[in-house]
Amino acid sequence: MKNKKLIIFDLDGTLVDAYAAIESSFNHVMRRLGLKPRRASVIRRAVGWGDAKLLEPYVRGHNLKRALSIYRKHHEHSLLKRARLYPAARQLLRKLKARGYKLAVASNRPTRFSLILLRHLRIMGFFDYVLCADKLKAGKPNPEILNKIILKSGVKKPRVLYAGDMVIDAQAGRRAGVKTVIVTTGSSKLAEIKRERPFKIIPRISRLYDLAIAP
Image (cartoon, rainbow, N blue to C red; front, side, top):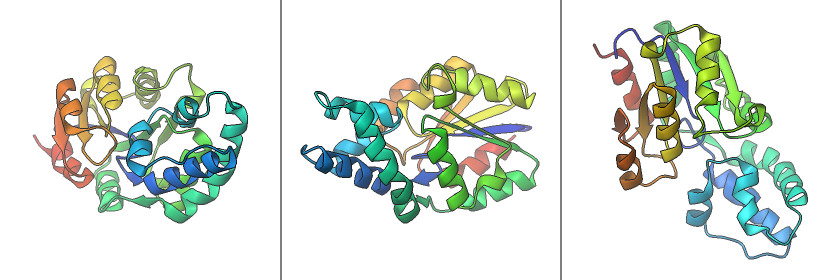
């Protein structure tokens, strides 16, 4: 992994634990629409595809546009109360930046909420690029989000590393032709991740540093 010049990060489940915030906003919508609240484990498994796809299976017969409006209004405040960085994430970003790496975010989370997270958690300044799926025709596992960041960075793909937490991250990285590391702190099960055969699987994001600087 020596001489990697660009590291792209997924956000939720990789750098940031926002599951409590998502659960709170999701079940707020359920209550407002007179629907059954869902367990945290069920909601967690549905995370990663963007908020519209999170809600859509549960609000059939209701107005998805209204559900999204309720969710997003609540979520803006829920993130500020409940989202947190994973242990050592800030230290990792600081160390990588000090070594001269370009850093980027590629998230299926809408831009508005990604920026709220990055600013609230005080990590926005580490990133050279932030790109979210609502600015594209398709989110992950489509590789467009990674390809656009790589093109903008001017870094060749052999010098790029992508870190995510889900099966769709492994798929997006493979389709983009970049080495992909999957951390097991997200919503995909280990067996599911292993089937995708990413470059490496790690138990926590702090382990990425050794991979990035290894010869």
